[in-house]
Amino acid sequence: MAAPQFLPIPEKIRALASETINRRVGRLPVARDGIEVNADLVAVAMECLNAEVLRALPLKTMEKGERTVPGLGDCLSQRLGGDQTVPAAAVAAVLTDAGLAEPAEMLDTKTRTQMKGIRLISAWTWHIGSGDQGSAVSPANTGGASDAWLARCPVCKTGILNRVEGKRLFGIPPTDYYLDCSHCGAKFVPEKNRFRLVSIAHISDPRWRQYLNSAKTADDWAVLANHEPEKKPSPASRVRTTGYRIRAPHPAAVPAPAPVHRPVRQARAIDGIPVSFSALRDGTLAIPGETKTLYFRPLKLQFLKGLRHDLFIQSKRTVKEALAQPAFSTLVQECGQELSKYQDSRLGQVMADFRLRSNLVYRRFLNAYGEEDFSSFCLADEGAERAKGILMVYAEGRLCHLEGCHNDFSERIDRGIGAVMSDACYLDGDETACRLNSIVTACRPAAVIYIHEISDDAAIDTAVNSLRARYFSAGNA
Image (cartoon, rainbow, N blue to C red; front, side):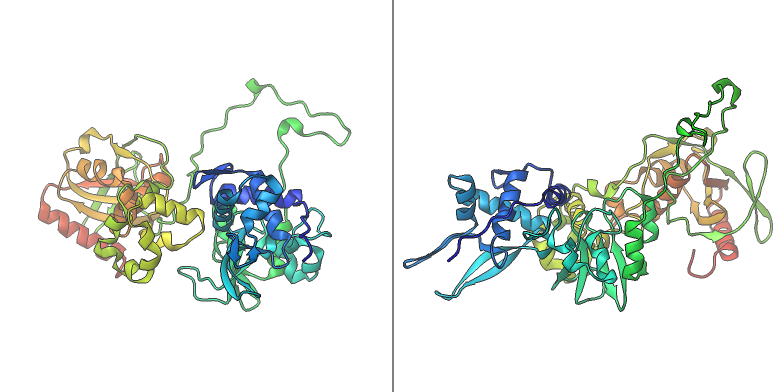
C-alpha cells in the first residue's frame, strides 16, 4: 500500500479554517477534553485527512488479529511525534463542531469491520494544483456562472458555500440540500432556479437585513458577492484634479450643525395604525374622541443604562425549568430529543450557542419581540408619578398602543415597560413590555409615551374602549 502524500495546507485554507473555528467553536487555542487545540494541530490534522483517498480516517486505531488499521492518532503521531491518541480525539471534535469535518462510518474491506471515523468536508480539501485555493473554489468546480458564487459567500465575502445534505433547518420547509457558509454561517435554501437567504449571523453591516428571506438567482448573488461598496473620501483627503489639496475652512468659520436624532435601530415593533394627531406647542397631542377631544401630554423618562443587546442570552434559569412551562409544550413535542442533552444547562447560554451555530431553533423560544434592542428607563415626571389614567404609545406617526392604568403610571413604567428582564423575551414572558420597550429604545430620546390623567376607574375603561374602537381595526387592539 502506497504511503499517503501529505500536501501542505494552503495558507488561505488554513487562515479560513482558523477563522471558522474562532467563530463557531471558540478562539484558538481552544481547550477540549483537557487538550489545547491550536492552529498548528488543526492544520496537521486536516493534512492527514486530505492525504487519504476518501479524505477520511478512523478515530481510533483498529486491531483485529494480525491486521492493524491506523487511525487519526497514529497519523498525528507520525507527523508530530509522541502519543497523539488523546489530541486526535480533541481535534476531531473541534473540526466536527466547526463544520470542517463530519462523522463517518468506515468499513475495513478485509475484516468487514465497521469503524467510527472522521471525514474532511469536500469544500475544505485541496490537491496539488489548487495553489492557495481549496477544491470548492478551484477553477474545475466553478466553471459555470451559476456555480461561481459558491466560491465567495455574498454575505461575508470571505467564506465558502458548502452543500449540506441530509439535514433539516428548523422553521424551514424540508429541502434536498441547503448551502452553508463556512465563515459566517449564512444559509441559502434552493427554490427552483433561485436561492433564498434564510439565516445570517454575526454580520455588522445592517444592509444585509434587507436581503434576509429574499430569493435571488445565483448570478444575482454573485454580483452582490463581487460588489464592493464605494468609500466616500474624507474632506481632508480630497484633492483637486490639478494635484493641490483643498484647504479646509477655519473651524470657527463653520457653524456647528444642529443635533439630529437618528434612532440606533428601527424596531420592527413600530407597526401601529398610521394616524396624524394635532400637536400643541408643549408637545401635547389632541386626540378626538367620540364625544370630546382628549389631551395627552408626553412623559419625561430617565434612561438608566445604554442599549441592551441580546438580552435573552442573560437568562439564568435552566432549559429544564423553561420547558416545564405550558408555553413551551409545542417545542417539547417537536424538539425534545435535540434539547434533552441541555436540560441542566443555562437557558441563555444554550440560546447563544444555537444562534452562534445558526441553529434557528433559538428563535422559537422567543416571543415576537424577544430579539430586539432594549433599554432601562424610569419615569422622571414628578407630576405623573401618583396619577393614573390612559397610557398611549405614539411613534413616527403611528398609534402603537393604548391601555388603561388603574394604578400609578410610575408602577407601569418603572416596574413594567422600562424594566424588561431577560426572561421576558421568551414565549412565557411579557411580549407587550418587550414591544413597547423596543419602540422607546429605537426612538430615544424622542418622547413616544403619552398619558391622559383620569381618576375614575370606570371612566378609564370607557375612554380606552372608545379610543380603541375609533382608531384600531378589529383584531389590532
